Image (tube, rainbow, N blue to C red; front, side, top):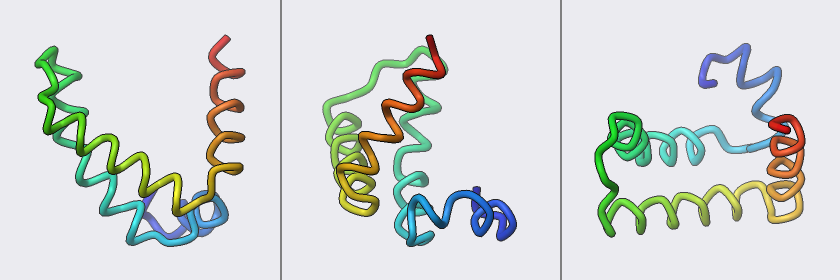
Length: 77
């Protein structure tokens, strides 16, 4: 995602500010890995995820966020 060709070609139009998205994903990477290896998330982990959700939501806007979620859900089923 952070490679310039990926960022410019796809993600910049969605997220706008690369540094916010990059920092937020870095914050939640440890939690993602923990869960992927069947370890339980702590309340602190949940608080970090909620904060990250809010950052991304505020960065791209609620309408665009919801649109992306709905698009992804429709591809799943």
